[in-house]
Image 1 (cartoon, rainbow, N blue to C red):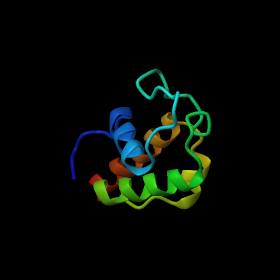
Image 2 (cartoon, rainbow, N blue to C red):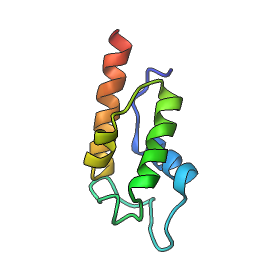
Image 3 (cartoon, rainbow, N blue to C red):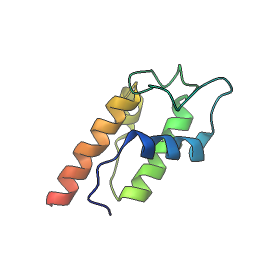
Image 4 (tube, helix red, strand yellow):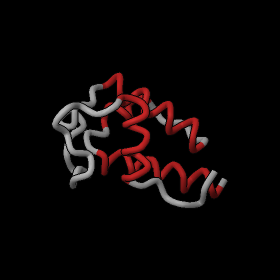
Length: 89
């Protein structure tokens, strides 16, 4: 497990691996505060993304976290909070 924070680039990489990208959506733009639904990612894609984050970073994400995190910023902040806690344990 890395001591580096979880970043937007990390999330983009995992999203693309888990669910690809909807045609016409530019993940290279400023998407931090764009809702996942506007980016073409529905609940199943986010659950798969969450599973990949858990495996990669050794943390457990609550399913409610994935449904409540409406934007990349919220998800990234939540993952980083969990990573901080897991590193201090």
